[in-house]
Image 1 (tube, rainbow, N blue to C red):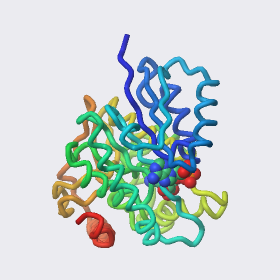
Image 2 (image 1 turned 30 degrees about the vertical axis):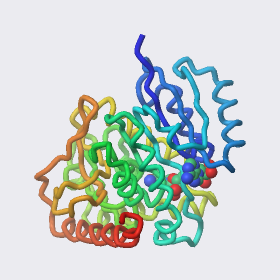
Image 3 (image 1 turned 90 degrees about the vertical axis):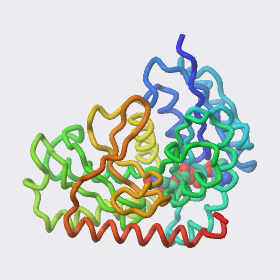
Length: 324
Ligand code: NAX
């Protein structure tokens, strides 16, 4: 029988966790034949809620779930992990800016980064808790026994939001929208780029005008998180969990040649300063990803990349004391 994968989720009793854990347990991420051990981390104040979550997982009787660990100790949660979803942190609430989030959540990723050193060196880490690019940068700094390539942050929700908008506009199912790229930060300056994208087998740029792409489309995708908070009174949860599943599933099982976007630790590609965690186009195969290099950006794209580099360099500056 296939050996189980050890899958850790932080903030497992939170809103995203409540959706994410069920998708993991059902086989949506690692495949229908891959057993898993769930390793769930919460803060001490969240342990009672986590107990309830564990009871419900047991009650769901998932055939693929071979064991469940529930703990408030990051070292225990991450020991020998094959995959880690860093979700736990404080969500943005109405009126809160990303700068406030950097200060509130950065310190969490110092301790958790150190604890990641206890995972397998092949561990796949996806950072969801915001500001996810910079939290990932902090975690990768302290998780120094693990190769930098194994630390990523999630911009898949932005990709899925862009695909959703194009699908509605062009009247094609989401599966027929391919190769949309998200560049940069999971923040308002993020750039959804359709230069290489197709919908229904035809280039997107031949089907929609540049004014819409640079105007309403960009604005809708960039401000979707805020719009959801205003409508729901709470930040995106089910769609975020779904995107985290997509991100990890593609990394683990491959993208079959399609472009997807992951925020990865830059090695200087596309002029992004080394070490910044920046969303780029990747292809995944055999359990690893490769940044797709050499794509030609137009002037608008180059300006958007510069804007994202500036924003993320600013966030890195804001947490310089944590990286000391
Ligand atoms: P919730 O407040 O519902 O849940 C967070 C959970 O994390 C809570 O149960 C809390 O007790 C726990 N927690 C807090 N600090 C922790 C720590 N140090 N270790 C372990 N657990 C800890 O928030 P939720 O809606 O689940 O959102 C979680 C994070 O995802 C937030 O930072 C949010 O901003 C971020 N998001 C990221 C998205 C992305 O695309 N990258 C989109 C959705 C979401 O906004």
